[in-house]
Every structure is written in C-alpha cells, then in structure tokens.
Image (tube, rainbow, N blue to C red; front, side, top):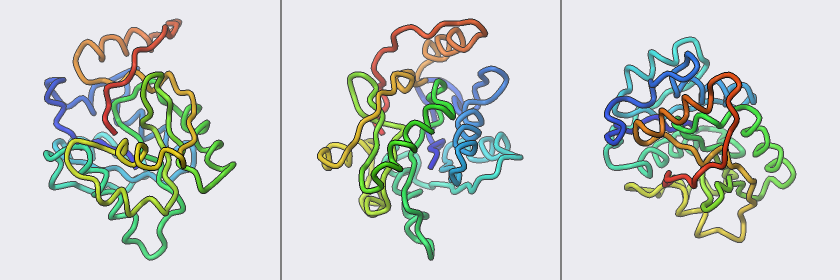
Length: 206
C-alpha cells in the first residue's frame, strides 16, 4: 500500500509530483514497489487526478480516500479496508510512503526478505531514532489498520504490538520530504556521484 493522499501543506504544493531524477516522487515509490513483485495499491486524496495521471502506465490499483484531510491514519484505514474486503485477502500489507526518496527496490527487498523468514512478525524500518515506514504487517493486523484514524498512522500498531515487531536498520528512511528544504536536500543526495551522509530521524508519523 502506497500512501499518496496528503495535501502537503508544509511543502506548499503537491509534493507527490515533485520531480527527482526526472520522475515524480510518487512514481519513484510506485516503481520500486512494483519491481519487488508486490501488488501495488495506491491511496490517493488531495491531488487524486494528478497522481493518477502521473502513474499512468504503471500497473496499480488506485483508491480515493474521501476523508484524506483527516490525516494519514484515515488513508491507511481506507486502504486496509479495501484489502480486507477482498474475497481472498493478501497474506501481508507492505506500507510505504510517497515522500521517502531514498527508499528503493533494495531497501524494500530487505524488508521482504526479513518478513519471509518469519511470516508471523511485523517488520518495521529503524530510522535511527524511531520505527516507521516502510513496514510490513501480516494479514492478522489488517483489521487493526482499518481502525486507525486522524493524523496518527501505523506507529500506533507498532507500539501496541512491540513484542511482535522485527526491526530492520533503514537509515535511508530517515529522509522524508515535508518542506522545500527537505526536497533540496534530496536533490543534492540523488545527484550522480553524491555520497549519502548521516541522516536525521524521520518526522513521518506512519
């Protein structure tokens, strides 16, 4: 599940569409997920039409969250309800954000490999100071995801079920784009030949 529903008020425009290395952020995230062989479900909201247009040509199921303005928790719940309502629910849900530009195929595959070793465990990224997305929830936690609301995201479940969480060191997840300064930093990091310095903890609340 890829979250791309917010209005990006602190960024000042649709950050999902901000280009990095020639691709909108949401496309970079979607392509990385698709490359792992994982089914791609995208939750849209504020810029639903623009996001859908940006993802044209990428195999994905898009669902619109009419309550996107209530916060990330509402968007996660919207996507989880879609998954849980299927005749055959998926075995797990890989939860990703559109605004983590350093998360690519290698990072997602790292999570999936750890999850495959014990399919009963939640697998979460260790950002350095916090746990958060991308993270993977086995199917038994889908019902809990549908109960999320407001601004708080999946971190509620990570805290509630801490004994069931396996962590994966993921310093790349520490960079999320909230404000224009974050975007400028991402552009610097992703220029050819750029080295990735120590990253500050993520502010995402998923």
